[in-house]
Amino acid sequence: MSLTELHLALLAGAPRHGYDIKQEHDSWFPDTRPLPYGQVYATLARLQRDGLAEVVETRVESGPERTVYALTAEGETRLRGWLAEPAAPTGAGAEEIVRKTVAALHTGIDVAGFVARQRAAHLRRIRELQATPPGAGAAERLVREHLIAHLDADLRWLELATDLLPAPAGRQTPRPDQEENRG
Image (cartoon, rainbow, N blue to C red; front, side):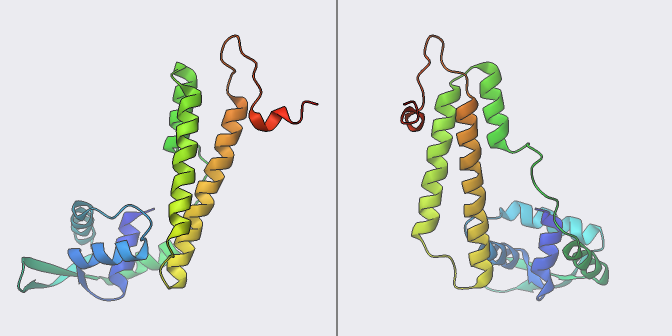
């Protein structure tokens, strides 16, 4: 996900300060990792430097001074261009789960254990997501369903990884789901 363009989208509705941007991001994507404040302010500084956002006011309320940013015309153009292009299809194979599995295979360090732990973590996360209702809006539901679909795809890939794992030396034990087909 491009944080630059996402910040532009978060500014599109109205001028905002960093705290508001972080809160809005976290409400748009409640099932993902919260956006760190440092990332918000670093991105806002780049947007301003690149002419995509501008400071429209500085507020001093009951708390710290807040700098309010708004989109520039160039920022609006960039946002519209980003939304006009489809996202690149995934599948480059560079996700951490793939890197860790390949590294475990090449090093021989507890490959089956890693795959089993990863599978358990994915199943646990799917159960957590299914146990709590998504936000009331269509956007929240779409984010939730996308996340579950990706976790499910990872689980199918982990099954393939399990099938392709070399058997430990001296053992040719079939997986439990393969035993019933031996007949």
